[in-house]
Image 1 (cartoon, rainbow, N blue to C red):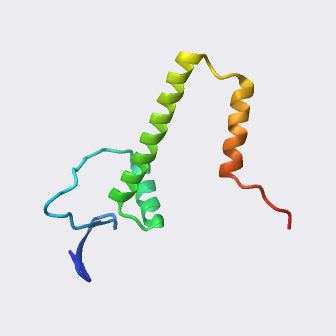
Image 2: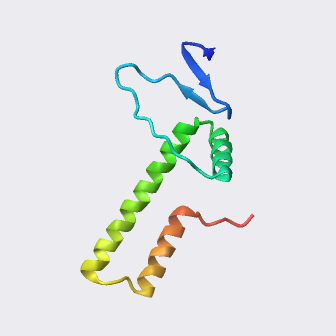
Length: 107
C-alpha cells in the first residue's frame, strides 16, 4: 500500500491503481475473465488515459451501454416505421461524420 497525500492507494500486480473505497457507500465489485491480449490492452489503455483499470472499464461499459440503448432505439423505430432507406443511412452517416470528424482546413 502506498501513501500519496491523504489517500492511500493499492498497487496491483499490473501497476493499475485503485483508490480507497468510501466506507459508507462502497462500489459494487464485478469479477470478470478476459483473454490475455484483452487484459494487456486494457491495462495499457487505462495507463495511457491516466485511469485505474476499474475506472477505465467503467467508462468502457458506460459507452457500450449507451451504444446498446441506441441500437435498441433504432430497432424499435424500424419495427414501427420500417427499415431506413439507403439514402437515409447515407444522410445519417454524413451528419455523424460532419460532427465527429471536423473538416480539415488546407495549410
